[in-house]
Amino acid sequence: MTYAVAMPVAPQQPAGEKPAKAHLPDAQTVLSVHHWTERLFSFRVTRPKSLRFRSGEFVMIGLLGDNGKPLLRAYSIASPAWDDELEFYSIKVPDGPLTSKLQHIQPGDEIILRPKPVGTLVHDALLPGSRLWFLATGTGIAPFASLLCEPETWEKYGQVILMHTCREQAELEYGRRLVSSLHDDPLIGDMVDGKLHYYPTTTREPSEHMGRITDNLTSGKVFADLDLAPMDPEEDRAMVCGSLAFNHDVKKVLEGFGLHEGANSEPQEFVVEKAFVGDGI
View 1 (cartoon, one colour):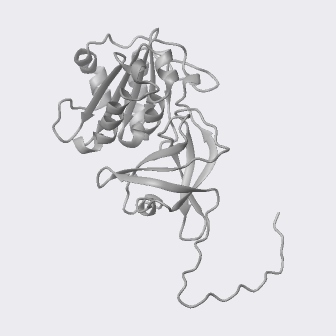
View 2: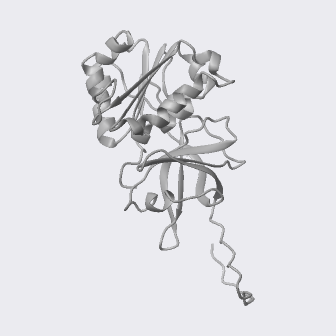
View 3: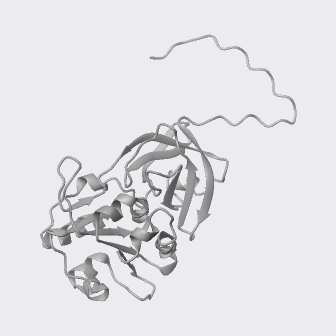
């Protein structure tokens, strides 16, 4: 409901003083920003006291658009549910309605964050199993960054395989640094040892492992390289996050192994994040 009220006349601003910065709705403060490449950056913001989420979920974040209205997109939370801060991992799109502005944020700036988390990349959406596969391209690794730091992941599974594919080696650095830090994490370090298999690949620049996730699964290359048995619906569970085309292709591959897609309301052998934002943001 909107009310019409008589507004007092604002006092004139003293000469030489800058106008006070208007606070955004649902504002959170940017704490740090890290630019990984010309196309990728991550940032951490304050966490609303009221926010409760499951590792792997996403929220709507953004800035005010040119029309003065909130411009929001779905972003997976890259930090775990126990963290006091929130981390996000994003691409930079020069002409993107949101990221053309978001990529220029600095510590102390504000962003809009709607504290209503949702998503399918959560443990509750999977049936019990012994191996968990995280399958991601680009910034689709963000929800898995959250889940890799979550003790429940290591309590539930004897093996965790992270397959992350980017075009160039530099674009894999966020994932590399994340994986390297897990072993020294005081909360989960001992749980990770001997359980984590990391399989980064590139599709353009030469690297130790190359090729798309779909090709490395269907050809059996990843199983041979990691000395793992092929996927078995009785034991294997998977989570998928990438572009719509990637999600569709990986879904077919997983179904070819006999796995079925699940959801929060009906747990199965794999889940796909349908809200992942592509290159147009």
